[in-house]
Image 1 (cartoon, rainbow, N blue to C red):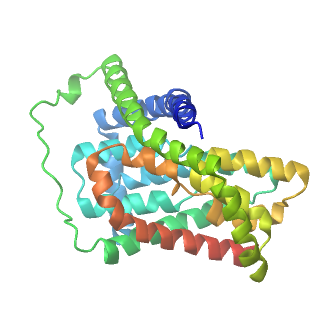
Image 2 (cartoon, rainbow, N blue to C red; image 1 turned 180 degrees about the horizontal axis):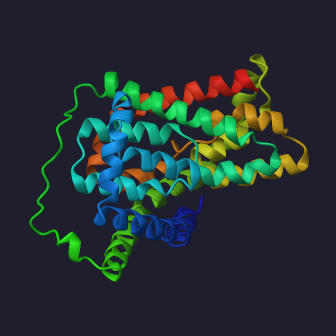
Image 3 (cartoon, rainbow, N blue to C red; image 1 turned 45 degrees about the vertical axis):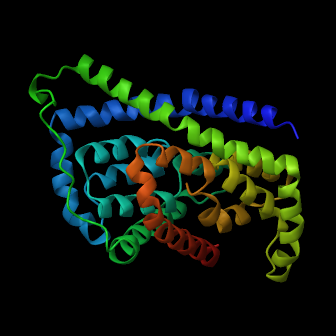
Length: 309
């Protein structure tokens, strides 16, 4: 086994993701978020949305993360999460938000699947239902012992928002976006290295052979094994690449895509963990509280898709 080759390949792939996916999306989204924050628009939206989202344990900023994930891509919510961390959102609210994001689908996979027959409206609605359910169960049960008091942040070094110009906003947001994107590289390299080692050892092929009889017993097509393993180990973009090939070959149907998208399209995979947990150390600490809620949200989405399709 060429361990060095696997590590080098994982490093190249991780840097490519950071440079050509995370940084462009993060720069644009964080500039927009920073502009809304400086102009006071963000505070007004948060004030309006907080009563609506309060029963689910989500702050007003969580609505931006929800929209960004479902309509843009898996990387877009990083901007909202970064601002939530900066503002000192409580541990309990942050855990609920993480559970919501891990349970929901991502726009960068939803949209490319539409030409292959994905019922986007239903998938989007179920994604939001699953995400809010994950947030609620985390807020009321799994994370109930976490503090819901906002952390105090030192505001003395903050500049006067009224005098902040557009160029300053762009430069500041751009610097933050690059820092956050590059901060996810170590976790990405580690996760992709694990994937490469498992592939080299033949573990994925062995797992496929072991799972086939179990799936046959439950009358589940074995065509889902490769896309599911790819999704869990390499992320949503890799899943779409495999699924699109199977669809082109006729090995997978549009009905199967719609029935499985609740489980297949979510951000709870190795690359997703590396990217989200790389934002700040607090996210790593809160992950164990968010994980059970996220799994329940994904299970709810899976059941709803199976029943509807």
